[in-house]
Length: 153
Image 1 (cartoon, one colour):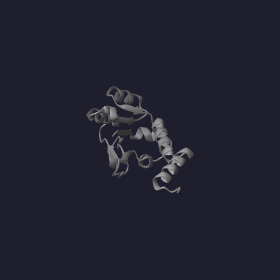
Image 2 (cartoon, one colour):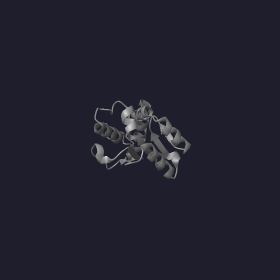
Image 3 (cartoon, one colour):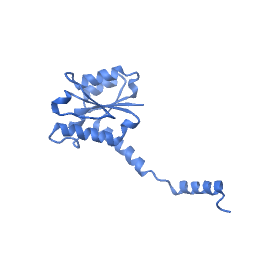
Image 4 (spheres, one colour):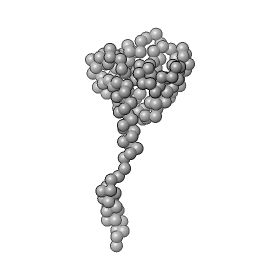
């Protein structure tokens, strides 16, 4: 199981789809998009935001860890999280912050740029939707059914 750690405000500000004049809306849009991607079904997902939850309105989320770092910088908090992991190679940090990326790579973690992360997860979802059986596969299944059920007698 992988752990995805998302640099919350970095993603909101770098992915135009989430930015919406109001920071609360940007957070909500990000969380909604992460839920749509269903990463949390097979992986752990944590979205890290600077500040206090009450500062800009609350965010409730049961299936994805949403963490407000209080007085601590989100980048430092993310680095601490990765350091605590049993296997940093199973951690993917999503951020366009070059300094944070370098720190995570030094710990053995993987970093995905925001655009790369969303493009990759979009492709996976599209491939799952578009997966159809080829005519050859259909014929093979038909042949097996005929043989197994002796339908051609």
